[in-house]
Image 1 (tube, rainbow, N blue to C red):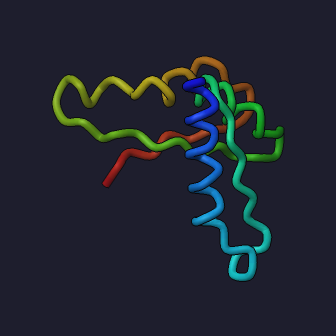
Image 2: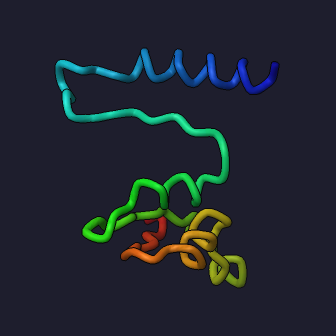
Length: 85
């Protein structure tokens, strides 16, 4: 029941944000699961996956977020982690 509610909410957001006339080549894909694993499913050998990082200061800044960390451990194709400005 909770998964159906989340899926409905996401579908509503996709409908409101999709502007096929202005951005005909943009495809919005919805997946439920590990963000890193789902992102890595879309990356091919000629693609570059760009993942954001929170950009924390101090000791916490040395530690990547869970998605960036998992991408770093699982990626077999090129990726880059970009810190928040």
